[in-house]
Length: 253
Image (cartoon, rainbow, N blue to C red; front, top):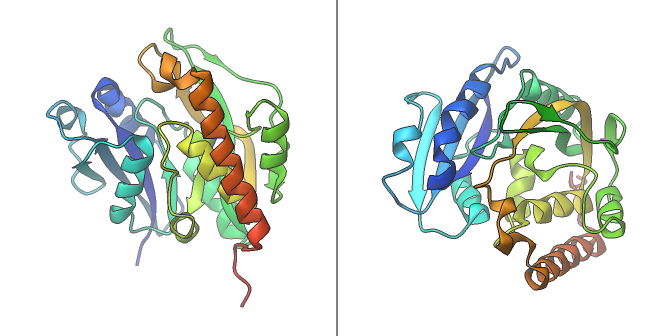
């Protein structure tokens, strides 16, 4: 029986035209023998503006629609169709460099104590150029609590990017998927993962993060101070409550 990595993408009409580029980046991925990837695209809402951009690949692509509720809701709904052992997040407007899936898979397959993986990110600018950042952690394991400690002391900015998450499906389900927030739902998941399990960071580029005027993080609502403070407060409180509970992954026999 072949094993699967599930790629989950939340999409809404403004970003739908980037789906073909994301698909091309998936088609460039090479996985070990016995492994396949499957892409689950979940529209945040029900329109007629996304489906025309969904690649025609019935074997490897599943497209679903649902009640609008934001990207966290869309991704969590997509879990209903995630029948693989691992889940990789891919935003509709981003791309995976060659080798990204295989590196994350190799790290977690080699060490059962790792629950998730992240990787280096490059911003993909409108002219096609890329920009990197200083301050990435060392290549290797990330211990429990390390991301939360860094995030809380660096103006709520993590040293690893939540858009690169590659996670064991059973752990993702145990934590309830993504947080019910209008934004920062992926940061909430990252900190919850770090509160309960060890992770991995790959210093090789694992994501091209597209910068464009229509992206959600460039909108004024995303940086509204009052809402941002509320989001960060509940994200931190959840992570600290999970750490305090003592629940750990993997669960000891």
